[in-house]
Image (cartoon, rainbow, N blue to C red; front, side, top):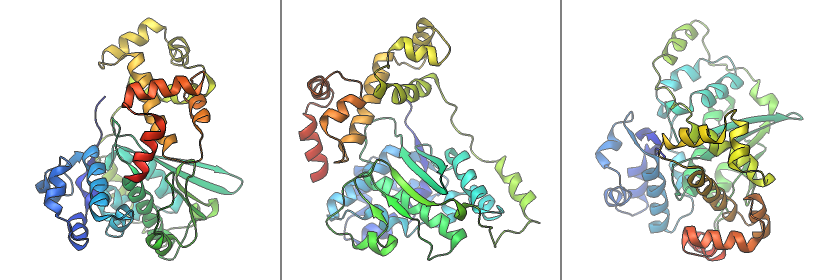
Length: 335
C-alpha cells in the first residue's frame, strides 16, 4: 500500500518547540527518518509515517504527553497552504468545513475528516491512515487541536466545542488539555474528534469579502489533486463495515463492489495486494484502534474483528505482532 504524505507545514514550529522542551530537534528528526532541510519549505511533501514517529519520539524523550497539543499552538490557518486563502473568503463556517473535507488531500493525504449531524449536533471525526501501523496518538492530538484552532478563526478565539473526544486514555497531567479546552475533554472515547452545535456551522464568516470570493475560487483549481481511491481502498472500507457483522468474506466484499471474486482478486493483484493481505491489514488497523481504548474488552474486540472467539483473535494477534493483545496494549500505554 502506498504510504501517505503530508505538507511539511504540518510540522511548522516543531524545531522551536523541541528546543524549548530541551531535546535535540535535528537528531530526533533524523531518527524519525525525515530530512530536516525539508521542514524549511512549507510546500514540501514528507512521509506521514515520519511525522507520527517524530511526534511520538519527542513525547517519549521529553516525558510529555501533550506534544501534539503544544505544537498545535504554533499552527496558523496559513499552514494549510493555498486552501487557507479560499477558506477565509467562504460565506459561513459550514462552507469552510466542507472545503476542509473535500480538499483534505491538498494538505494531508493521511488525515480523513467525517462530518455527521443529528438532533442539532454536529460531529467531526478524525482518523489517520498512514499505510502501515504507526504511533498516531500525538498526531491525532495535533490534528484535533488544529481543527479547533481553524474553527476559532471563524467563531472567535474563546469558542469551545461541546466536547473534545480522544480515543486514548487520559494523561496523568491534564494541564494543557484544560488550558486549551477547559473541561470539555472526554477520553477513552469511541473516536477522535469534536462535537459542536450544528448552529455554529451556520454562523456567517464576518471577515469574508464577497468581491474576493471569485478570485479565491480560482485557487481551488491549482490545488494538489487527491489521490484517487483504489480497489484496495474500497476493499478496506467494505471490510471495516462488514467485519463486525461477520460477513467479511471475499464473495460478500466482491458483491458490494459489483464484481465477482475473480475480478476482485485481479484488481487487488494490480496493486500488489491480495484479499488476505487486505483482511490482515484492516484487522490490524482496527485492533490497534480498539486496544488503544480501555472501553472495549477482548471479547468485544474479537467480535468487532469478525473472530468466532477471543482465543482465535489472540492467536491471530500474536502471529501478526509477536505479542499478546494484553501485552501490546500495556506496552503502548506505558510508551
